Amino acid sequence: MQFTELGIENEKTLLMLPGTGCTWELNFMKVIDDLAAKYHLICVDYDGFETDPEKRTPFTDILTIVSKVEDYIIENYEGRVDGAYGSSLGGTLSAQLAARGRVHVDHCFIGGSDLDESGKLVASVMTETIGTWFENSIRDEKKAEKLKARFSRSGKESESGSETSEFIDGFAACIRSLEPGTMKKEFYSDYVTRLPKDISVPGTIIHVIYALKMGKKYERRYTAHFRNPDIRRFDMQHEGWLFQQEYKDAVLACIDECMAMDPAVYAPAEEVPAADGAKTGKRTMMHNFGDPQGLIGRLMLSGMNSGHMYIMKYAVRQIDWPENQQILDIGCGGGASIRLLLNTCPGSKVAGLDISEEAVKKSKKVNRKDLGTRCRVLQGSAAQIPFKDRTFHTVTAFETVFFWPDIVECFREVHRVLRSDGRFLVACDAGDPDKHWDEMIPGMTAYTAEQLAELMQEASFTETEIHCEKNIICVYGRK
Image (cartoon, rainbow, N blue to C red):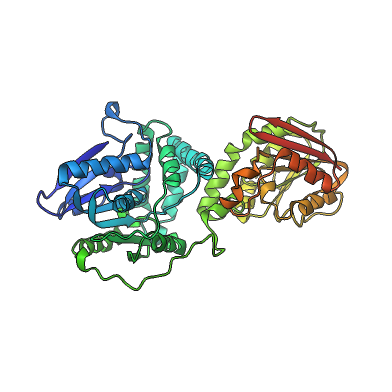
């Protein structure tokens, strides 16, 4: 852990807490001089991000970081600072400082923080999909260039593509300098670290720098976690003011205005009722497991292509694959399963089906060299398979059946489109209904291998077989 102090010695103290995968110098590089000209800054580099690689302490978890920040404030500032600006992940730390009560902060800034939370299982899955994909993309220079181009395009509306590109270059260099896995540890700890609801601390104002282009669900989270927060709205992307000039001056002025407020006489706006997206039926990030959408959905599809490959390879080894077959892959996701089937079955044709428009686009891109000849991809549901009776020799379903509504009826649909003596192959992570996955991931139901075999039999499949290895289950049925 490393603390760097700069700015005006006797001015108000402002703690600077960077986001995931960033040093404070990188995170605040465009604004640090402006802030140092007005405040006394306490800039933090978390464990694993210290300037001297030989003195780095491995990153463990967020609450350990918060505790070390608290110790520093207690030792050097008698347990009180005027403000704490937390950018993205840093906003979670800023909120924890207020909620825990070991130190006092007059002004806690929540800068574009998503405040995502989940149980350990979901956190592990998210870390291994998005976290692994993102870290690997940054460490690979060619993939990093593609990532930079994607984020630069998102800034075109403000003619700030070059500014965004400069930040991505610095971000990539920072990640490459870290011990592998450091960023994934930040991801995981951010998900599993709980932040209390309805935080209200006498003498502390919670200021939220809310980027409207992140979406309305984040404002609902802010009003759920903080009682009457001071929400400042800006028509920008996530923390855009840190690297896009057009927002910089407005947010700096906002910070000055907030730091000048007296917490003792703060009069909040009328309270906005908190809303829980999951309970109101609104879409949340967790819906991307069953129906990927938007940027998060696209990232998850890329992660699934690599993360699920070991399951798919194990499954295809369990049965013979004659040439010149007609194969349907339901829930084709990012298209890696289609590619595997095309490579496994020379001369065969594979149709992919997925409920997600993003998945269809990704599958077509991954299999573009065979599209229109040996491969086609359609959007549709297992509940209404858009093919005629007795079309396919084999139907596959990798890591998908736990999202199928009325699974027996879906299995009957599979039975309908299979030819006589056709085969149905299902493979997924070993399920345990006692884990209550349905409470963590919307629309998800876990099944054991035995349950899947019974459901196949109920849908008129015969000769069901079960193959298991470590955490993989594979169930095979014949029409």
